[in-house]
Every structure is written in structure tokens, then in C-alpha cells.
Length: 308
Image 1 (cartoon, rainbow, N blue to C red):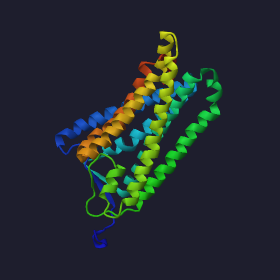
Image 2 (tube, rainbow, N blue to C red):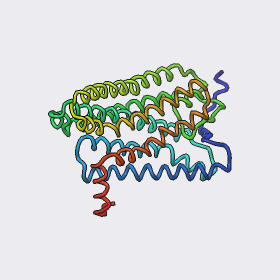
Image 3 (cartoon, rainbow, N blue to C red):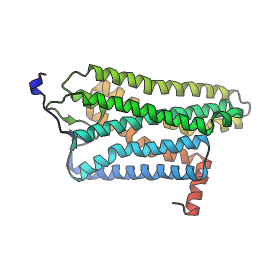
């Protein structure tokens, strides 16, 4: 498209999940409920961990809960505001800001899940050295490095979007500014953007997934060597919650992008992305509390002592 057709874009249109007016109150109520459950549930996890649970596993879990609150807060409040005001507009600056924080917290989620897999690997495969290896300094360093990598990647991706030019098509078939859709809307050359996007996806999604799979392959091997059935159950039970969250997050995220690539249906992709942007962060507190006796005791102590 020629330069004469390029005009500065000050805002975009978020098409959302549905154009049906009668469905908007239902969508508003549903997403408001899920958002409140996500924030309240993950906040309870953070309070319980800070008050009663001080092991590395729960330190990483509290960080994951904080990231999940931030992750959903990046998209849902704006979506609810647009439904409430019956507007679909999002400014260019808001869109870039949303992309920055969405990528930041999504990658941070992935890296923290990887760190938690390493924690489970050390706990099961090297139990006698666990407290020495997973010392507070290493735990803090792992979280800090996760933040640094996420911030740098998010900054790079956002700056890459800033170099793009947008024309007359400013409709985003989503309920938030998603990086891939933004790049597709551009009328300037997007080769470099796509290259950076795919390299980052391989390194920051494929790499951590490979690390998680390696950790669990060694964990399974160690569990199989345990002689007693009770010992096997106890060892495996410490991994169930984490493995469930990893499966939910990766399966839903990969499902969204693989299905959208196969069908090219942007609306279906937007609906399916609700799974990893809203549903998974909402389920995390339930997954970690329902099967975890330590977490149940910590949450009960919070309520009994009136700390919340």
C-alpha cells in the first residue's frame, strides 16, 4: 500500500466477543464475576503464603498468584469499561501499553512455571540437598531473572509495534490488543516483527516447555525407583497441582494459536483465548488449595485469626 494511504492512527476498535446487544449484560456479569474470583482467590494465596508458608515452592506460588492478578487486570477492566460505556474504542497509547503488560505477565507466568518445575525436580530427585540448593538467594535470583527477561522481551516487542504504520483498517477482532492481530493490521512491512515474534515464541515458550518436560521426565524416573506405593503417591502428589496448571496454560494457549492458524477464524481465536487469559488464572487458587493440605491449613488460619 502506498505512503499516501497511510494516516496516523490515534485509536483502535476492539470488536470483543460478541456484537449482539442482548448478550452484553451477560458477558459483563460473567467476566466481572470471573475477575473478582481471580483477584480475591490469588490474593488469598499471597496472604496465606506470606503469613504461614515460607518454603521455596510457596514463595514461587505467591509470585505466580501476583502475576496472575496483574495478567487479568491488563485486559478485563478495559473490556468491562467498554461494555459499561457501550464503547469499543481503545486509544493507540492504551493499546501499546496493553500489549506491553500482556506480554510481560504472560512470559513471566511461563518462566515462573518453569522455575517451579525445577523446584519440584530438586525436591524429588535431590531431597537431601533441597534446602542447600533452593536457598533464599537462589530463589530470589530465579524470580529476579524471570522479571528481567520478561521486561526486556516485552519492551522489545512493544518497540517493534511502534515502528509499524496503520491504515484505514483499525478493527481488532479481539477483546484486547493482541500482538499478532496488531501486526496483521499494519500496512507497512511486518517481516522483522514476525521474525522477532517467532524467535521469542521459540525461546520463551518452547524453551521453558522443554525445561519443564525434562524436569518431569527425571521426576517420573525418580518416582518409579521408589519402592513403596505410599512413597510414590506422596512424591507425585506434590507435583499434581503444578502439572495441572502447566497443562492448562500451555494446552489452552497452544490450542488457541494452532486453531487460529488452521481456521483463520479471528472470532473463534478471541473466544478461545479466554481460556488462558481468564479461566486459567482464575482456576489456579482452586487447584493449589483443594488438593493441598498445607494451603488449606494456612487459609483456615487466616480466617480463624481474622487476618483478612
